Image (cartoon, rainbow, N blue to C red; front, side, top):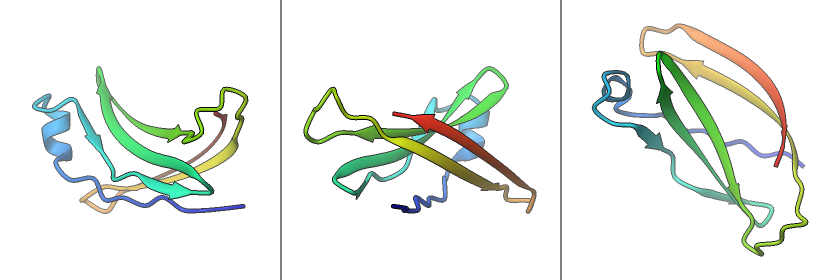
Length: 87
């Protein structure tokens, strides 16, 4: 089973300047699970966080993911990364 989360983050300069701490995407439901993304700044690093909420609040839930991230800066530079994670 596959799905795509896509979001264009606004106000990234404010995040980089320290005016705001985090930028959140809208949440989306896929396969009865709520998913969302956030950009956060940690020191000089900007982190993309993927979050999920199990609506059944079942502690026995486990979801294995392969996350392909493609970031495109306003100047056209791109960054691609693939990570595996188990929620």
